Amino acid sequence: METDTGRGREVAGSPLERVVSGGAAALSRVRSMGVGRWLRMEREALAQTVKVTVACSVAWWLAAYVLKVDLPVLVPIGVLLTVSATAYSTLVRGGQQILAVVAGVGAATVLIWLIGANVVTLAVLVVAGLVLTRLLNLPAQNVQIPITALLVFALGSTYGFARLADVLLGAAIGIAANLLVMPPRYVDKAGKELCGLSAELADLAEDMSHGLRGDWDRDMAGDWLERARALSQRLEDTEEAADQAAESVRLSLRRRRYDRRLRQLAEAATALDHACHQLRGIARGLVDLIAGVRGLPGERGADLPEPLADELAALSRVFRDFGMLQVGRGRSEDLEDLYAALDDGEHQQQRLAMAFHPTRHTELRSLQGALLDDCARIRHEFDPDTGPHRAAFPRQD
Image (cartoon, rainbow, N blue to C red):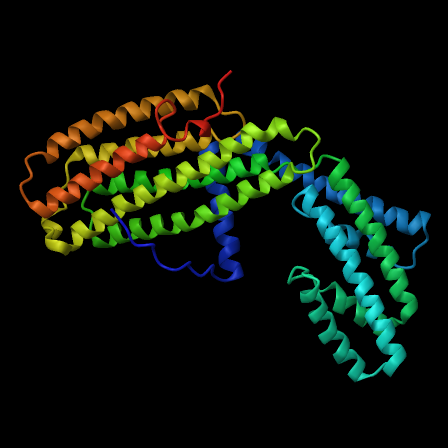
């Protein structure tokens, strides 16, 4: 129903607002999934946190007691700067850190030798460091070149070589920790992202169902549409999570064992993308109806047949069950409930079609047809047997 591309990406809000919204979303997931299942989903992140903490502790111990480094804290800092989301990106980041420090030490040593230590040298070091960062295609947030150059400027070239040794040791420990000790597999995280988005779509469909059973108005319809637009923008995050999952097994010796799971997550993200736009089309149709645009009856047509609310309730179950199937290996109970919700939705579709049949108002009849079509298309997206995304469902052994 909706053909526009939506409004521009919303402003993320202040840091405090992001913290509050993130905490609220986490609490909502815990309530909907249960503490036990939520903890199982988070075990990968907890394990990686413990691993990085141990790596930093080992790095500090080696620097302080074995190598007798003057500033042993710089080595665990090197670990933190190197360790990234995946083993592959950690290897890349470790190389970038070493390259940045070498460039910073070299630039500072040469400039101080040529023009001495003064304010001109400092300014040139900062400019040169930032330019080199871009020329070497380092990440924008990587400012190791100018930082290292300034530290050499302040503490002397002797510090520069000590800094290089610290970064080399920290990078080596960070790379070893991420490659050899429980390499991060963000496959479960991607499934969690898909489950969370699917749960939010389920909540939206459920709210629309409840609203249509009462005295809904233009403000409520507008809120549904805004939420649908925001969720369609959030789909970018799920795509990034799926890409990160694929990268996380890139250096794995047993990469093939993850291939089917990765295909499932990619297909599930596509299914959610399509279904989200269809739910957004339903929300847009309700906004147009209550607003009375294009010859529609406006508030006089707000008294919609009850089967539409029942259909949206069934679709809410479909979204929720589909999301739960993306966590781990999926439960047979969720798949059975998905089948039941699809059957219920088909039954409500037939009732709704019969309720819409007597309509003679041309514009209203066109809108009703679009609502019916969007509901049917959502169910088709999530049909495990005949739908277009059968690979999105886990294999039930």
